[in-house]
Length: 183
Image (cartoon, rainbow, N blue to C red):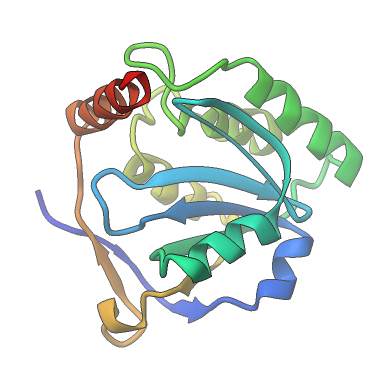
């Protein structure tokens, strides 16, 4: 599999995370990375421990800085039919539907796909991985820009290569994470 390239990656202006909608890709060069959604300065997502709601984005920024976590922030256009409150209500409802990430039930991408479908009318029936979603968002002109933290050394001329991974590798990572929680 060839690498997936993100072009025109710019340094992140942290203040901009307090408004707008972003996909947050933590551990961007790890297979697989972890994906959350940031709406108006709050983070939403699901992992093997459960869902995350209304968590201040600064908690994540502090973590990213402290552990030098390679992160990509994909800024999305605001959906035209939503007020901020409607958008927050929508993302909360979608994330609450998933008690946790589990093999065959949900990945961290699952609630994000649902939100993209409801907020942006993005067709997601064939989206299984981040590499399926980003080109769809790009083709709908939903992506405003790509921003990064801790990836300066990994980039070449504003371009980042991410290793493609499979659904099998996602399931392996979920299995490993669930095993670590029971130990």
